Image (cartoon, rainbow, N blue to C red; front, side):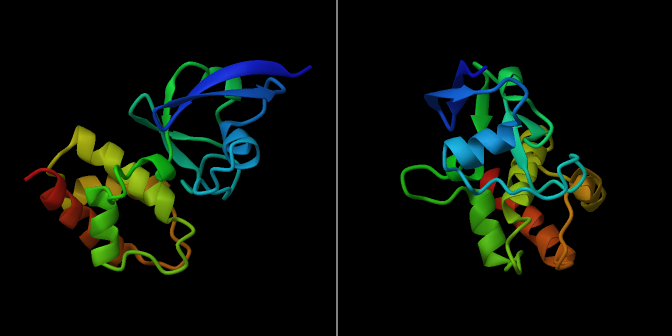
Length: 156
């Protein structure tokens, strides 16, 4: 039986009707039309569905909608402000850190979480942090440069 859930998505309170146990990924994409969060493996292993929940990196494919009710969820659509890209988005664009773009939203949100925790990460910290985000196009060198640039832009 469907239930009503209040979700705080990208700073806006949204009410959705959903069966308990549906994933946040399904609700974001199918009910709210926020398709920037991608379905990858469905097992929380590839990072394509990365969102920030209360500022922490999470896999939307593994979270039930009831587990995020009332919590703050940030998707790629909510990252920029007032028509401007977030510094991490600017850095990914400047470094051409994407090819097909499928992994990019998850990579960007994982980078935001990294830079909130480690404002000036080492290359080893970047590699370790992004280890759970897969890029099938193997754009890792450009992604590494983008994260380095993002740290410089964001934390001036």
